Image (cartoon, rainbow, N blue to C red; front, side, top):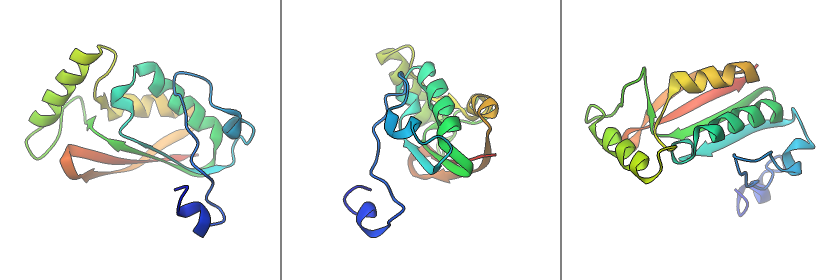
Length: 141
């Protein structure tokens, strides 16, 4: 984004590093309700649940009405692991994550939808991606 997008597109700002366990930096909080796109890739499964809470809380404050929130990574659907292998790979991956840190693990989309709702964010679509991952598209109301 920084090396290409910011040079080509005038409306593309440099990426902002976030620590989801802490309040978001002033580069975001000083511009509430102005961001039209937030992207989070391969993160929520390798962080404690509190980081998912902080992510949606911060996104709810940062996103403009109609703003897009994109999540990419492994997720459970209706409490079940998914994939071309009937979820076996993601189940093993989840077990490995939880053995590394018991606060980590593949999140269920339903739980994320429940977190997003009080923040004014709703799931619009999901798409299957390679390697048993999903692309989740949320929108700020």
